[in-house]
Length: 560
Image 1 (tube, rainbow, N blue to C red):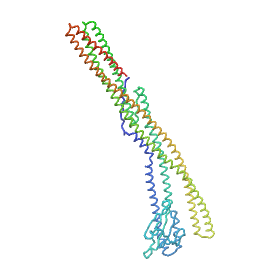
Image 2 (image 1 turned 90 degrees about the vertical axis):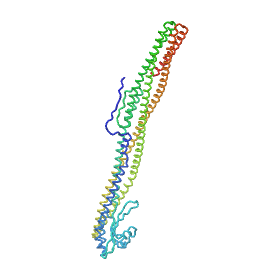
Image 3 (image 1 turned 30 degrees about the vertical axis):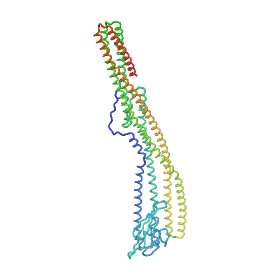
Image 4 (image 1 turned 180 degrees about the vertical axis):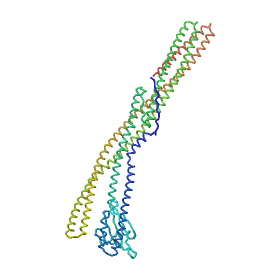
């Protein structure tokens, strides 16, 4: 069977590791970036909205300053009350007050506390400053609830005749903040779900197929089929492992074929040596029967022994070549084991990243459940406000009827203004109720989808775990192969030493035969000496037969 060397040409492009690719996929699941961007957008939007309210408050305060100057200096309280009510009709203003220099209330939009002294710490500081001042007041929860603006009313003499205070309601700012947070949360959830889907898809494409290819190639290699090639799908650690596996299978096939050829050559050489030594043994038997043919047969034996020595040298060379081939195989297997260990470590990292992602998704799932638990309380609050507005409508109707009976135009305008406020409040409550329904539906859909993605991520974890187990089996198989090759190398080393010992014995036997032939030539008439030489030659021939048998055993071991 002809074996072709498999080569892989690197296609142009950037080489990315498996860890890098999985990190890119899992980075879509990390909500840190979305949280940072959302926080930046939220803070900037809140700052702009608050700044617009602050500018509106200062503009309204400065416009009203000239009117309050006239009323305070003239002492007309009716004018000041009418003035503050008109200014306070703006829905963004919570109240408008005119204070004298001592902090006593001269006029207020609600009509209450007239004549009372405002003596809180913030008001005292604002009055003591005698200049424009803005104070942000917070509710019990620490959220901004009100912005109070103070400006002095200068008397004609140059002193301070009083102060104009204007309060801007920040409830719209808080509602805008809540809406922005909900939108950012929905966008973050959508990005996380998309990241989960993409991570699952990339994990299947990058890991599962290459590992199945490696498992199939290992099974083929275990059965002795070296022709199967692992497809190189990616330029990463798994791609390098597949290429190294293909290279190892080609080298294994070539080296095993070379070892088989060497074993066949050694066997043939041993058979030739055995045949020639058997011929030499028969010649020695004939020499024991007839002494006249001793010189001729001894010369033939020397030639045969020289040929045997040459074959022993050839066998020694083949043995060394086989030893080198085995060492090359051992080196290739060691490289492949190193590559497999790297792949196993990469899969372990992937498994740990997937577990971290699973824990993050479970935390998000718990957060959505908590949000769903708070929905009934929000619905109850909306129902309470709806009932309150209904009562307000009834009250407005009574005020309008009373105004019609008494003919009080101011009360009629107040009833109309109260009616408009009720209509706007009802419209706002309806919008808030509709928005809450949308949020409830979105949360339920997100909870269902997130549950499905958690199950999908669990399945992907199981897939990666099975892939790691498969690669671990491949690694154990390679380690067993490495141990077997090391044992073979040790046996080959011992056999090479034995062949070298036989080679030295061949040289000694040839020298002994040459000395015996010289002794026979110098003692042609001495039959006793010639018989001793013949006995020596016979014993040397028997020793050669034993060495040939030993060579035959070694050749069989090389075949195995």
